[in-house]
Length: 256
Image (cartoon, one colour):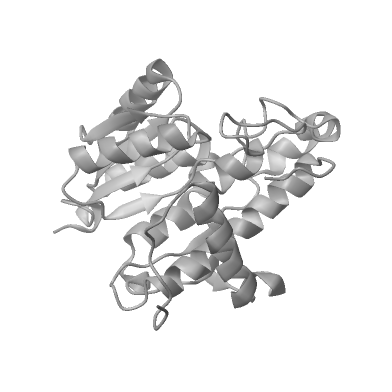
């Protein structure tokens, strides 16, 4: 097998794969020979993105699934469709996310940033605080997932793509960010550059078996001190499963 086809025969799902880092990730993984599925909210936009990915990668095996990932009913419907379409899923890239300057509530009654990026903030809302909290939750949840999957052969890693030039946050931008963006945009990474670490973690033999680690620029890095608090992570896991009414989930190794 050639290096450019090292994901041949592998099934990959990239959530939020219609634009930005997600789309660039899908292109990169399709180039490596994977059968790639992307998700998006709008069918027309998602199909157009899939056509672009096929053209850019030369790989016709790119499929589309639509879902609003902030809705638990939609997430469950998507999961059912994926399970029906694929005998197994080799790589899941949880890329979908968003930033909103103002507080929004989902159909499930959850704060939108937390619901989309991680799954409830009800205090005085700050877009930056809500986004930062949801990203910390992502890191801690990944570490907890890795602990619970220890010994199964399934790995879970988390990464920071850097500051990337996308339309992230465009639906409800903060005033200061909107004003500063034209000045800093030329210095941001391109989506393709932002996708490099994701593609590396999904495909490189160098990270086979590596789990529960945080990566930046294809290298393991230490995350914030609080992210390593196992008691808080276990509580986050419990709260998250309660919020999504999930009764069956991996348990920590040695736990009942």
